[in-house]
Amino acid sequence: MTPILDYRSRQTVVRDQGTRQACVGFAVCAAHEWMGSEALRSPEDALWAAHQMGGRPDVEATQLLHALQGLSKHAHATERAWPYGSPPWPAARPAAATEAAERRPLPLWAEIARSFAAVEQELASELAVLLSMRFVVGAWDAASGAIDAPPGEVARTGHAVLAVGTAREAGLESVIVKNSWGDQWGVAGYGFVSRRYLESYLKRAFVLGRA
Image 1 (cartoon, helix red, strand yellow):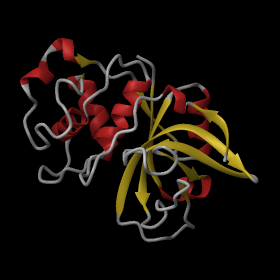
Image 2 (cartoon, helix red, strand yellow; image 1 turned 120 degrees about the horizontal axis):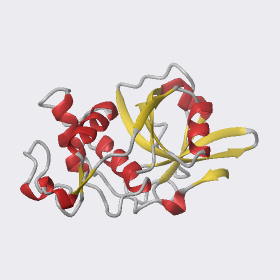
Image 3 (cartoon, rainbow, N blue to C red; image 1 turned 30 degrees about the vertical axis):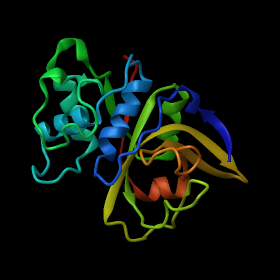
Image 4 (tube, rainbow, N blue to C red; image 1 turned 180 degrees about the vertical axis):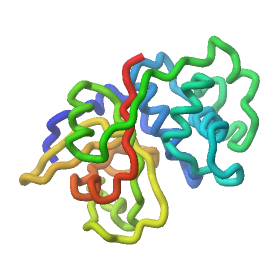
């Protein structure tokens, strides 16, 4: 893939959610860190904030919308204040994560159209774009990080990632995404979601502005 827009060099370290349903927490943290955070942000805090806004109280997986709403209301704690897994969801917010010095307001955000063009437009303005997509089993397995599937495939679960650029190869367009499966997945933790996959399986997209 030949990058057209490529902000991978501006990103914080790729992290690993492990076996937990925590992709929303990591995607929102990656976006907030890119848009001006002075420190790594806490995925646990993002999950906690999301569950204050809605969703099933017995299910860890949550929605990007709830995480953005919750962090806008409660601000976003640092990873230092609430490290991943210590304690894990569904714990109450630790005292350290409530301290003003450890929390930062979330930048302004908005929902955008579910299209490649809309995502590319926001990325051209150097803004973070969060993607919630239906997860087609097998489409995310390529060692190259290339993610593609024809429309109509079975997708029973979802996945959230951060868009950090666009790329083209032989006329095919892709969105470069930062994943949360560690740096051994894809290309040092990044993948390439084809335009076909994006426009077939994208559920919602949000842009996060600079702090």
